[in-house]
Image 1 (cartoon, rainbow, N blue to C red):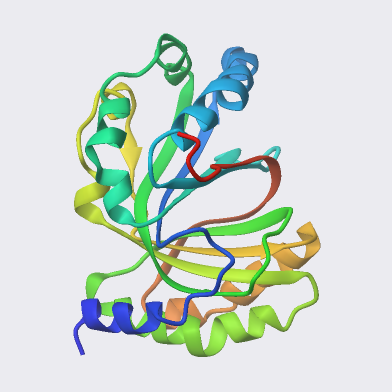
Image 2 (cartoon, rainbow, N blue to C red):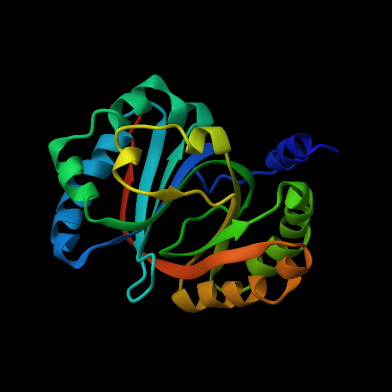
Length: 241
């Protein structure tokens, strides 16, 4: 079975925890002198602006102090076409003055335009374990099978783990050049695992599960794994764009 067909087959099992089938996932640090500006911009302008684009459904930002990258942000959308749409690209190619001022403080940034491959659980959590994975293209099916059949069922049995999501990056969509992307170096994780939890301890327990060695045996490398705490959540209301 081809990877494309395998991923599409698994995706039919998606839960209702996520709002849509597409997402933009972003990790970043901020230079010390830009922290206040980052919070002012992201809290009051950027999340609201993104959710004004048709098809964007929810934006959430998480933080983990003393970790790099310190912030993890996820925007959920109807599907990948939304995050490659003319409306979205127009915003990326015409950043606001506040966006231009703030982006100069971004450091250590990863960004992936993704589609959801598999999702279980029906709730969102105040914490999220985020794993950025390096997966050779020929090992995508093996990763998918392991996550769906073994890792997610085990993680969901832990107290405090309430949802788990597997994403694969759309390489073409993730590398579209824009005015915003030209302001900083970006890398793109090929696959991402998220486990939503009610406590940080539950996230750390799930982290130990994924670091137990099974991924290594599949040829999958963990670039980064950390449990972040929710800072802000905004939902797009129907008809309010």
